[in-house]
Length: 109
Image (tube, rainbow, N blue to C red):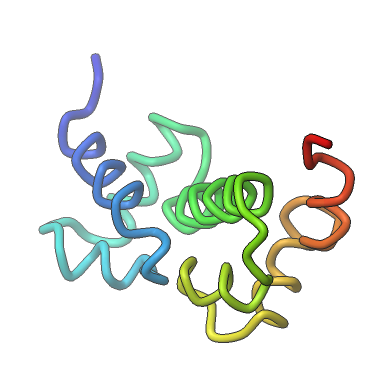
C-alpha cells in the first residue's frame, strides 16, 4: 500500500530540491521524526531522504547540462549550489564524471 505522507514529502523534494533543501527542511515542513522519516523512506524507496534529495538535484543538473548551453556556474546557482566547484564535486561523486565531461559525452550533436 502506498504511503501517502511519503508521497507528499517526495512531491516537496521534487518541487524544491533545486532550492538547496536539506533533510532539516523536510523535518520543519512535515510533522515526523527524523528516525521515522528515514525508516519510511527506506521501506518505500530503499534510500534515505538525503539520497533522494541528491538524486533529484543531480537529475535536474543533468537535464540542464544536456538541454542548455548554460555555464556550470549558472547551473550551480539554479540548482541550489553555492558555487560551480561545489556542484562539480557533488556531480563527480554522484555520476563519477565532471559536469563538463558529462555534457561532452552525452550532448546531442
